[in-house]
Length: 316
Image 1 (cartoon, one colour):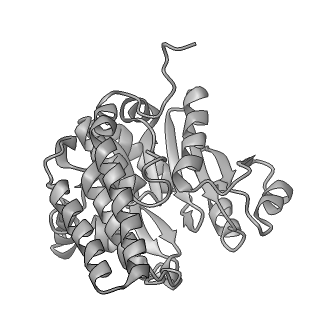
Image 2 (spheres, rainbow, N blue to C red; image 1 turned 120 degrees about the horizontal axis):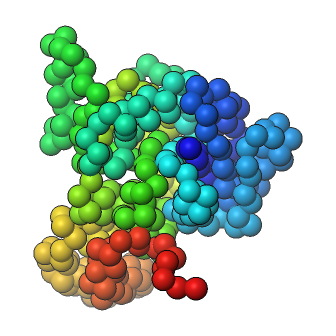
């Protein structure tokens, strides 16, 4: 049994393609939509046009990680065998889930996560973030390019160090071991990086299945950051979190203290320039970084235990 989880927020633009493609899946699946209080007609369209879809209205825009965690917990409680996470702006081929499932049954059991090839919305090239983050030359996926170019037999699965969570097939037993997304530290961005780092720590691999594909419509949003005036500082904080909580083997061997000192000195330099708005902004991010640093050790220890962010089975 496979539960498909889709988190939506103002998704009416993609609903027909996303949910329509899932309904046409060759392999039987159960679709659960977690709607984060959309302000458009998303929820009403699902209720009126997709009776086979189970709609859960979260009542708030709680972000990607927390809403997915609700859906994953539902799948675990109902004893599904697999969970397939799919972005609201993505859609599949009829055979996509079936081929991922078949690959999971045939591949090395250490593959805890399988993902298809991600094409862009028009299907004429690789989706940008899939290309830049999943197809790096440090990964085994470069062998896929070589096999394709040299006209060798295409492999069943190619191991990768990272693939974004736009389309993940994960066994529920893996979630029980690795745990759920850390929706406290990574409420929207970075939760997939963090989870895959923990996946590797617990001895699992992640792989791309080239015989399966999705379409992911992100082209019109590339390079658009909403005009944040403090984007540079926000990005620095984000990267700090990734480095702090995503260390190889989850050990605190990165010199985070030096990074903190550099940010503090930059904040103080703003005072010397009488640039009080910049000082205030930099101090805000410095304080958040310092708080994260102080909590990192205990958080990482909790990652190492089975079932992070899942209810304690020994508790009533």
